[in-house]
Length: 379
Image (tube, rainbow, N blue to C red; front, side, top):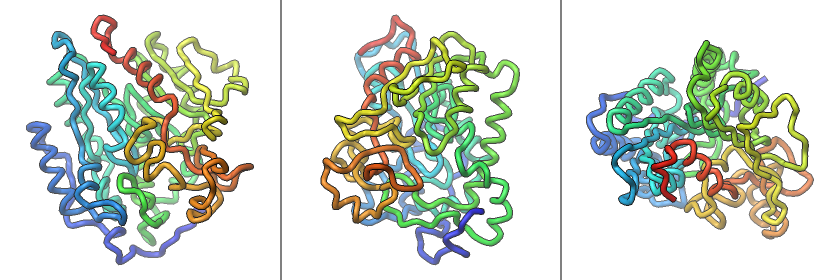
């Protein structure tokens, strides 16, 4: 059974809905949209300790990264990136900058309930998320010659980083969520230490996840669903998504010859014969020289020099330790702390969740090749 850490909503501002809601409003221009969201963040964001509030607003703000000045203007490419549950547009800062230098315009958006306080997820609605994505993709498609949509975790698309087509663990309890929210607002009401991602999870979010998953799985199973090319990235050790389901659907449903699957895994182990596919590339996730046991769900889109999650950055070490307290993790010497996916319990060595991708540059190169026609690629 699910264990609820609270029986009712906390009186803390973090865990109650704010005074305003971000809806799927008509799109006039990205500048106007960004200005509206900035006002919304200014009204609703409850700052966490340790970071200036103004900076937290900037980090959670959706952004547009135009293709670099050296790029040809004869055939433009655009990518709308949709963040995942409890996350924010910040997760795409690195990808946007890298792809813009490679002649891809990148836009992001802020999904309703995100970027402000966990309490705003109590009233978030998956129908509004879909409307927001549709509005912004249509706007992008009007402005570029070739438009792609993609995302991280619950932001599904033709470019998909660890997409939540099927979840590990939580999927077995989604049916309880509709009943449970009569009695509680949160599955987990956690201390908030991350200025760009919620740690707490609302019951309503679980309900909306169920809706998203149902629609996504139905869409994948439709005839012709795999007719368009898909760029898919996943890690074998992911604690959130079901990799077997993901790779199986890629192999069986997405037959386009230009589709690509990147899997971060311990390459010392054999890959299942029934998943062999010439469109799949493997990157070794066991990197003992960097104290890395495996790649995490969180790490895929993040460059090693990211200002919050990168090597030596504020959130890189001990934000989510496995099987030990935050204080005990922080006291460990660097040589003794290893990095991995999130796990319920302790490992054979002390571990914390890996927050950056050591193969980031190679992933971006593969993504650029997928997005750009050969004649327009610029490194």
